[in-house]
Image (cartoon, rainbow, N blue to C red):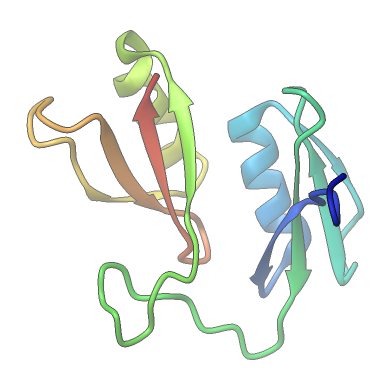
Amino acid sequence: MAIATMGPTVLDCPDPKGLADFYAAVLDGTVEGGPGDEWVTVNIPDGGKRLAFQRSEGYRPPEWPSTEHGQQLHLDLYVPRDRIDEAERQVIELGARAVQGDDDGKLDFRVYLDPVGHPFCLCVS
């Protein structure tokens, strides 16, 4: 018997609703919570997974790939190989910033920073 069950993965940020909107658009999720809320959740239509975003006053983003202000965690988001370029275009339009490419296809992932600086990867599935 498990000691516990897994809840949502929670990311600190300055604007929970804004960051939830970004990830809801990327993952085709739905947002629970509104502007000004201290905690906002994204329900992802992939087996009940959830992400949550918690307001953190004085939020300081990680500095990837530095270890001085390390990433603490990152999200791996999977996309089909033939959609990686389109997925990249879409996340950048939503506010992400590309920080590492796939070395002309030699790597199976690309690294981005979300609108408040959390690293995440688009990985080839």
